[in-house]
Amino acid sequence: MTSPSPVDVPHPLGSQHPALVVRTVAVPTARVGDLLALLPEPEDAGDIVSWVRKGEGFVGWGRVATFRATGVDRFEQAQSWWRGVTSEAIVRDDVDEPGTGPIAFGSMAYSRRSGTESVLVVPEVVVGRRGDLAWVTTTTTDSTVPPADEPLAAQPDPRDPGEVVFADRDLSTQGWAQAVEEAVARISTGTLDKVVLARAVQATAGHRIDPRWLLTRLAEDYDTTWVFAVDGLVGATPEMLVRLERGLVTSRVLAGTIRRTGDDSHDLALAGSLARSSKDLEEHEYAVRSVADALTAHTSSINVPETPFVLHLNNVMHLATDVAGVVRDGSTSLALAASLHPSAAVCGTPTMDADTVIAELEQMDRGRYAGPVGWMDASGDGEWGIALRCGWYESPQSLRLYAGCGIVAGSVAEDEVAESVAKLMPMRSALGG
Image (cartoon, rainbow, N blue to C red; front, side, top):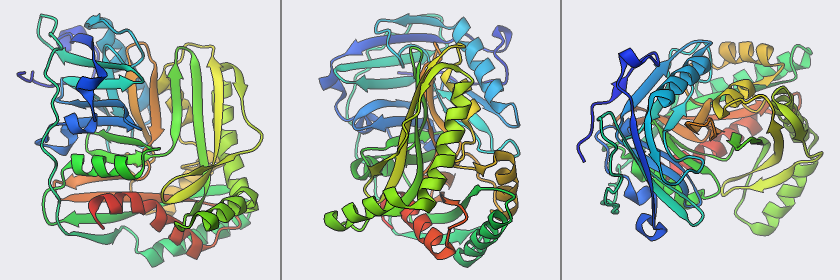
């Protein structure tokens, strides 16, 4: 298939970009196989997309349209652009399920102050699978509906990036520990209840880092997470910020973490201690309340479990709560993500006070780390996770890795450093470090 020239426009006006022509057809699931194995080797790491969990979800390649924005209204700008694009699109959708027809993959900057652009990408080809259903969506800017019968074939395996060297960025490990101590001191004065502090590590490889290498290894080792790639941001997030499907909204809140040892009996005891930890329960309650309060404004009913459960991942365990509600105001998934962001799980409580402390103590721009990442279809349905356990391509051979920890009154700097190391492990392991 000949790739059309990508359309990169700031506004959804018909006079400024050609209409998208979209075709979705069902295909046998046997033709799809491993979604990630279908991804071709990209010339640029940003030219593929992924949203895969336990073998289901989407992969895509090529770019037909791209939108970028910065600033406080980046969510509104993105939603307005997508509404305009989809209203003008020529669509033939033989499947008619959430995620079929026109679909955009997005990654939003964490901060309104960030110089990093938020982005929506419309791929040329998207392959999706959910249960016994599989489909292919092709999008062009040609005047005819594309056939959507592109052969699906596994691509050659990605190559090993070679030896990878890791180094602190922005703050040294000791410097970040001092920032944690300062945050605890400010919490003790009563000016805020919780703040989430993040740190960054630079990973530099001997050879080009193929994003498919990372995605494949992350999916193998962390199959309960959403393995994502959007515009050069690659990772595996355990946290679903918001899912919207036919009016039902759900959100999974993770806050409160303990590192696993690999010994099942010991980990079971650790899970029990996590579930009883006053420090972690306090941190979790702040995060749950911030999500529930935000969703209440958009829902006719909402369910918030009284107690969290312990979510077991390969490297850590989290306190987790699933919040659900019925949307009453017609909000899209991106609008709901905007109302939830930043939650206490990635910022703190109160939000504005915590955000000010983050800007002062972290001494870095988070970029799209800890911002919403996911997808949205033409109806507004979609899934947006929080961009955690991830890395951003600074060059073909270099990624910036991120990890953050929730700091409350009982936090100990040494323990938070250890937690940050555990949260960096998925990306480090995927790189071979």
